[in-house]
Length: 175
Image (cartoon, rainbow, N blue to C red; front, side):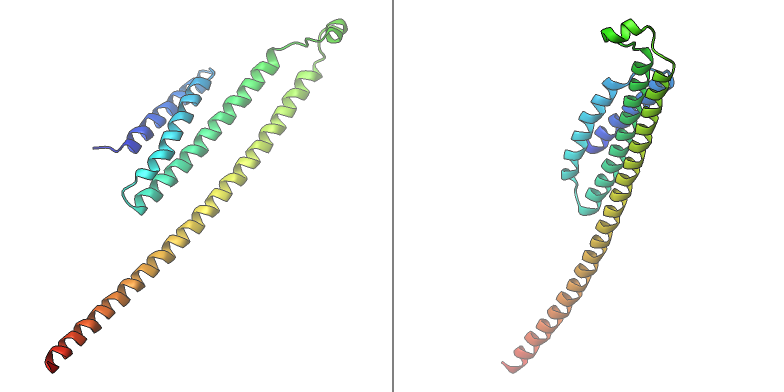
């Protein structure tokens, strides 16, 4: 039987597929992105219900991947909205109305600015992704070190148990 995490993840993935369909049809996906953000909150809370540490780490990795995917689609949606809004608006100031139609360089400069902003956002997203990857690597190392420590403690506990058993047997011989 699938867990709540798996069910929520499946709903999230279904919404992402719907978003992709809307993008191919050149439609706005803001309402679906809003639903995805709500599901992301549920996924984050469900990570606390993991049965063991490895499952919790798997959930965390899955949530991080979903967050990056959601962030990417949100960015695309925002940029698409800016492009369509920028292309469909006309100047509203009285001075602009007096001057006549806008020059052809205004939409181009706005689009260039949007492209620069998109590239900057992409760089920032890549940096965030790299930071997340580095953090995951550090967490993996910590987990591996902890696993090694647990193994050593189990070995020492076994040795101590053997020593105590031996001591008990010796004491029984004396009495």
